[in-house]
Length: 588
Image 1 (tube, rainbow, N blue to C red):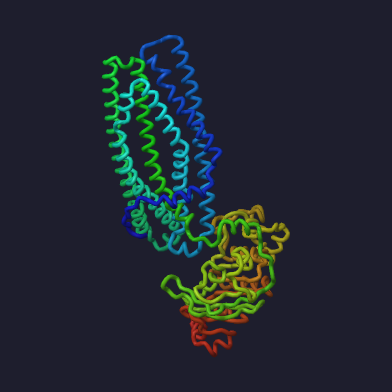
Image 2 (cartoon, rainbow, N blue to C red):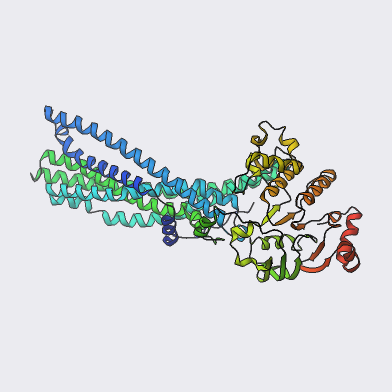
């Protein structure tokens, strides 16, 4: 866990904030209804002083009592409608915003996640947006009715006596200065809190997922220390916010008390001079309180706007992050599935790539003929996984070309390009859900139960699937934890068999399996995908003996290519790797 980071003074950027506001599809019809309800509430508040002034002045006339009862019943109904519509509009907007930001996260370029923790960013979808968007909707709904109430109330007070109106306005410049000064600090405090919530969420998500690893190394005390640092960082940021809010509350209360004093003294002097009646004085006193309260609400709205600007900072960052494809392109291809063209050749032509300053591939060239199997071998850090990432365009090659079937991969849409690959990774990743959902994940056409059963049988997965409660509808836990490594791998093989893509990519498909299971999975791979173009990353030198071609990499450079026996003669690195594995040395 990283130590504490120094806060950067920032007052926020409105540009990105308003771009986010324009992109999250706010429910304007619902907001409009809530706005009308808020106007009704403001109108009811305007009627309150005049309706109750007679009673508060000592009159118990039946008409005064009847008017008060009718008013308070109507007021309760309006208040109920106001709260209902505010809640509905806020939660509806949060739902739309979460959908938008999550959609943005799924289309962000992979290299963005090299510098940003996905689990920390995910809290932007859960915590940040809930506070930011609901606050924003309240502000949109309430700001105009607040101004309406203030102007209408001031006009009524001005009819009593212009000095009464001026007594309410006299401290406005002081309130404005206070509003600007405090709101800037509230933005900084809010940003710090939500940044640290993201850090803590990411830390906890990673550790909870790997609790057995912590226990295996008996590292509970160290993790407690690291977690305590993260909690302390969040506590420090929250205490900054508490200090700002305390200052805000103290200063605001002092200004309001002074405002009330000015209004009371002015009203009493005018009453003694005979310029206003007792009923006007009572009505003014009620108005001055609510006008001051509404001024306070407007100040609070501005401060909330600065705070929610901080709350939404990471959501803005996600929406503005570099994306693989535009939203329009994503929608255009969402219902499409790449049509199989049969096995295709794959060619890397003078490909170079760097992660920042680190050179990962250096002028690599080789061809995988259509329908053949090629293994990519090399020690850790040789660039094997980078080749796969470039092939699927998770990253773009810095130099050179990658050709599929003779055509440049850059000229194909991402959806169609990736639809040409089946992918079996080292940890056989599966999401939680039913077996049916796992087998059809990423397949947009309808797949019958018969087809799924046949694919599972071909992959050797049906034996354990049939024993699950529900069979194809049996539940699998998160990350496939309820299955063994071999079972997960066979499920993935069955899924990719159903996918029926042109090119099969294998990333250490047997490394997490015991020897017997690995041998069975290897046999299944070459039986199921016979005739497909296959690229396989592996450290298992026994697995490459019968491959059509072997590509040997070292620190991003091509050191050899050919068949097994030929490379034993011509490539010292390959020969060394084979000898190391024969002696039981694990290749890394």
